[in-house]
Image 1 (cartoon, rainbow, N blue to C red):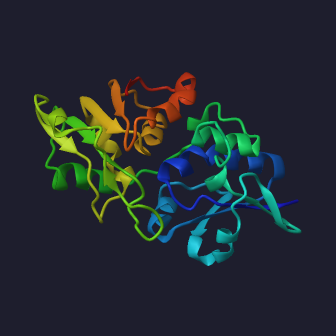
Image 2 (spheres, helix red, strand yellow):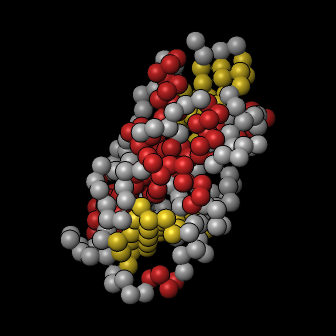
Length: 248
């Protein structure tokens, strides 16, 4: 029986999409899976609670930097490292698809493995107190930010040039997503679910929205930092449950 360590320390969307890989590993081997996350993302374990997955501090696993393999590798007699962060290296497949190919996992119905434990109190606080929204109020939700907002481990958060300011005109009340130290990305779920129109870049919200039970209005999704972003998601189109409009 082997133990597993996942190397994918950041990328909220990467983590969410790959949860089904951990599900299949557990079903096959019955072993707890250790998943180190960078310190600024450890809040995710308050929202993603899986009995067989332990989200731990990435800094406690300094040896991970020594492994850049693109397929699982045995690093001790009883431990296998699953380096999802490098799965696409040397591959012509989309980045997210490569993570499943490298592990031999099946991504069908991947949304079912994303179960978010929502903090309704924080969602209401953001909705009513911070944004000043009212029940049944019409508004358009726009989200132009992408990237893990931690310059110590990634490039930080950036605003996409593919959603210009002109997008904000003629749409009535606009609510734009932003980073707030008191709220997580998951705390925006109520704001997203109550919006009458949605525009966002290719980022982790794509996976969060797909995991929602509530059907939303058509979601317009844009490239984030270069013209090939949305092409990376095309392999998932047959699996999608919400109505998306890809704007290339």
